[in-house]
Length: 162
Length: 288
Ligand SMILES: Cc1cc2nc3c(=O)[nH]c(=O)nc-3n(C[C@H](O)[C@H](O)[C@H](O)COP(=O)(O)OP(=O)(O)OC[C@H]3O[C@@H](n4cnc5c(N)ncnc54)[C@H](O)[C@@H]3O)c2cc1C
Ligand code: FES
Ligand code: FES
Image 1 (cartoon, rainbow over the protein chains, first blue to last red):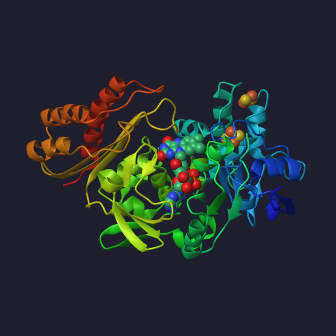
Image 2: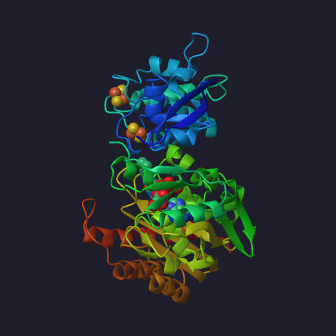
Image 3: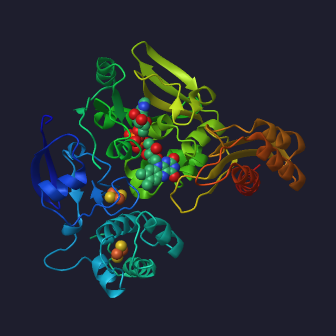
């Protein structure tokens, strides 16, 4: 086995550390080493978006990044969205608008949508659809997801600050 | 699938990175944004002995204006380019092209240097570099050299960069004030690689066209500058007939290959259609 490297990073505001091979993908590090299985892994080549996380505040694919590259970084995963036992406004909107069925794509959808709303707090429907095209959903037909993101964008105080 | 084993190095300077490339004598791969390379590693289509990760070299990420050019460090993220005021002001065609590169989460990591070095025939940045006659700076064991776009792209996924060289900077002449521009593209889904794309810049003086720039993505193994089509506009102006003639000429100039995504004929047809659309839309934003 190759030499192990130490990875220290902040996940959802908590300092975490692990040791892994340099070839370990960030998504596998999150799921296997840090036991954060909310981040899903689908295609492992950047296409489906299931593994999307926030890396230093920006949405990124964790399946095409090495864990060692995240040393020193701040991550947000779906586990970090709930605050004080309350769903994030975007999660509330997803529940309200039936934006999920099996839930496989949902973690990636949420973090992609959060990044979208932070860079563009008042998106048009076309811009929402363009932004969400980064993540594949095989269940919902997307309409509920688009509705949820549109509704969340209109929430006073908005999800963008949260 | 998961990557095969490799040695991992994250140098903090270009010199250190060059020394590592020398040490592995062609068996190491440069890792930039990883948005093309890591999928290849995951599928084990690429099994380098070592990765030389450029992400810890902050000196490679910048956007500045110098000598009439916009100069971008190789590790400048596509996302940074998308939101850059300098790019918006001086190189709006590059800014527009960026929104066609994958999706925002891809652009968070993907770099301009990686996109150009990867030389995917359908990629947008190589088409813009070709249309605007940009160049890249490569650094190797023997020092620096400047490579013009037309000498850079050799065939599918192949450039004239040596295995011991690092692309350190991309230089693109700033666009003249008031120049019209457009990137027109057809892809099956937003964010997919283009089936065909056309990058266009038009400088007009009334009905006259003083400069026309047209280049392709996806219409052959390398991006192609459509010089003979540009000449029609520069000679005959920007009327409907001239635009039609330029578009027809564009379709004649390309020799695309067919693949699972589209036949050669369809790509040729798209080249004409998208050239017309790109010129027309560029005209709409041109001043002068
Ligand atoms: C889902 C998805 C959709 C995408 N859609 C598009 C699209 O529509 N259009 C598009 O253009 N791209 C698209 N891409 C690819 C993306 O733009 C990549 O970021 C880009 O192709 C490679 O840049 P990178 O920085 O990620 O490089 P890497 O993946 O790290 O490297 C790519 C190659 O270039 C070499 N390399 C990188 N940097 C240098 C350097 N400085 N000097 C010498 N060699 C270097 C590497 O060794 C490697 O061989 C997509 C990717 C994904 C995952
Ligand atoms: S698992 Fe990362 S994009 Fe599909
Ligand atoms: S809810 Fe099942 S994949 Fe989206």
